[in-house]
Amino acid sequence: MPDSESRLITQAVEGDRDALAQLLRTHGPRLRQHLQISRTWRDSLDVDDVLQVTYFEAFLRIRQLVTRDPAAFARWLRTIADNSLRNAIKELGRSKRANPRRRVRSLTPDESTALLLERVARTSMTASRIVTNRESQEVLRQAIARLPRTYRTVVELCDLEGKSPAEVGQELGRSAGAVHMLRARAHHRLAEILGSRSRI
Image (cartoon, rainbow, N blue to C red; front, top):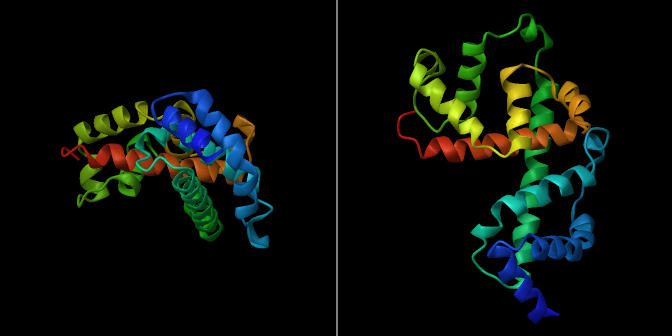
């Protein structure tokens, strides 16, 4: 089995999606056992949410896997799952602490863009400087367009249209916890894209 699994890993890294799907089916039960969600968050988030986002990230990032043996693959997958869960809990905690009086009015498109840039851009520029910079707004739009469709949709609905994760979850047929997790992963990928653009 280790030899055949190593072969599947090599095929997956080289772009064979069926090989990766087979690996995820093999590792799924152990990953499910590994994930522990505290009682505090179980109403908002479940293991299936974490697994869905983990598998999605695995498909997006498999070509970055350097060490191609079963133990390394298992560690890599657990790391993605742990990060996804941690991001979701961080976002859920942030939304619970948010002051509802702050959402008295809808944000303008420029304000939404500035807040998103402030959140994800690796920059020393302040949001007020960014928002007046039309070039930076265009760079952000281009970065959003490069996101995988699921991430792009969540960013557009949550960050640019100002919908809550619960509203977006209803619209997409996902839990609010899954939307928090997808949004956090989308922000991470936006930061990666924007980090390579010196114009921001």
